[in-house]
Image (cartoon, rainbow, N blue to C red; front, side, top):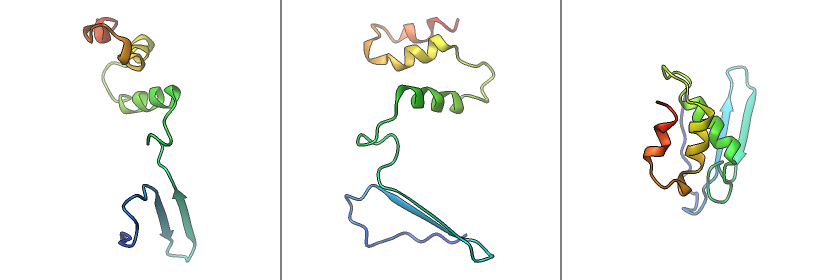
Length: 88
């Protein structure tokens, strides 16, 4: 594996291109102009919930749907203690 970082990119460029050359000569390349989760390409609530579930899939106890819903509503919770009250 050889990594080449483009130095000619403007600092405002938030995208990335991945270029892979296989030993047999095949080339795979893709470009993402604005990564998922960036303010210009926000994640949906379903994307956020799926990412959270993926991150905790090896945890000893899987979070309830109620916890996921409360995480998605953090901005309106009166007390963050409510966040984990459903998990007790």
